Image 1 (cartoon, rainbow, N blue to C red):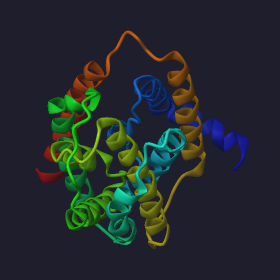
Image 2: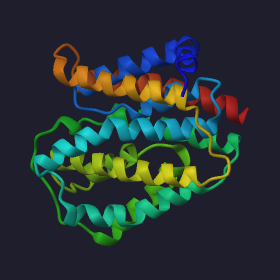
Image 3: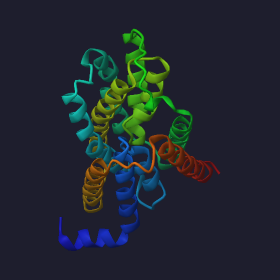
Image 4: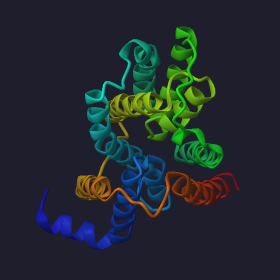
Length: 259
């Protein structure tokens, strides 16, 4: 990796790098990762779709690794309940990443995924709840959820938390804090599995000059956000604003891909 190539990427993609930095600061300041926003930003560029998937997964790994470490220290990850979720999600995320898909299919799937993410963000209120309500878990359902979400996640290039968290909240799977911890762990392992699957795909390609800059940007932005702990923008306000932006991006992608 040569210095002049890094500088060239900085100049050519400065606007993307700046957006990633802002998103990382805002989201980490209220305890979120911002994975869907990274994917939406990349989808509006001319970057090859195979690279978009890999870059998004790498950014997911960079963002949630720290969260998983903290949740583990706080003993918020219940492996007995989480293992059924990831038992099938990991191989299916690998399969989804390995599967060769067309560019048109990718963007249609991405459009619907981002639209779901936007709706989920807009209607979700319980992610800031402190209620300790939970029900008994069903291992068969957990395995089914994990497998389906893992497969879609591997194909699109997301961690799957945007699908998993609403389901766990609606089924009172556990307390909101433990659901957040589980979603972070789920995102991490599925992002790694999906990335390995993509790496083994013959079409795999990634511009390490740009990707390295984005990973460093996300990491630095996340650290700044964690330190600032933004008091001016609440989690609900951030999710509502992001929902509108992601919905617009998803509709633009779908209109362009379908028509």
